[in-house]
Image (cartoon, rainbow over all chains, first blue to last red; front, side):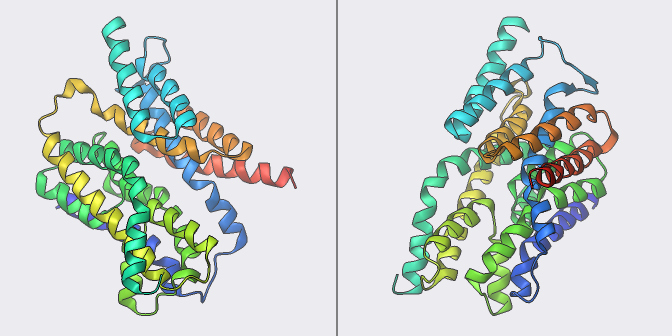
Length: 105
Length: 227
């Protein structure tokens, strides 16, 4: 039941955002300041979602060099920047994580 | 393009090069969804929400027992970009009926937006723009639903030792890095990352929202200074 409410809530919020200005048919435009603010949202959200997964594992910080996730993520960042390819980024990141654990885990 | 059908096909064809990026993303979302939910729940989620990043975030948060209200709030933040897309597409689509508006809204994704807006900006007067958009959107929808379904069917057979949860941050990295095209956005990304690292211990992943607010403030400060 709780899960159905969660799905309904997520679906409603997402659909409302998608429909917003399409529904208004040009009768109201987003103020310039709001547009500037929204411009920063996609990059900041994705970065903010990523970092904790790399350094905060099972309830505590792991900054050590023994943390293969940091190494793999740094390499994946380089691959994503250089090749702009989702699949390649995943393959390199997962490959390095497995390699790192086989060597030091 | 001389007919709605031709425009629809053109939109579908224009989407094809994006398949390579969408398919792995859809597979992973399917695998991780079935990791956390039963098959019918997983299917309902991907059909009703139809938003990869929101679904990934929900899985990330569900596995750390985050309350539903916080997950919905995070969905709002993650999908705020749809406001921008909606505002920027509206003048080109000019959907009149409610049915047309609802269909256009439901099919709005990063990919269908990117394909359509670049076309419309090059040829603002091209006829049947709505149909072109619908073509790219339908193609994305089909790819996404088939991809996540395959992921769900595969997912139950994958062992935990594969650490597939690590594909979540990797996917986010693959999505965000190409978006950082200016020094200003790099600065915004650095602030978001630093604050997220320092606030990772906060309960319910509230650090995400704190980091986004801090990064937006940092971006606005940069803008004010460079003026």
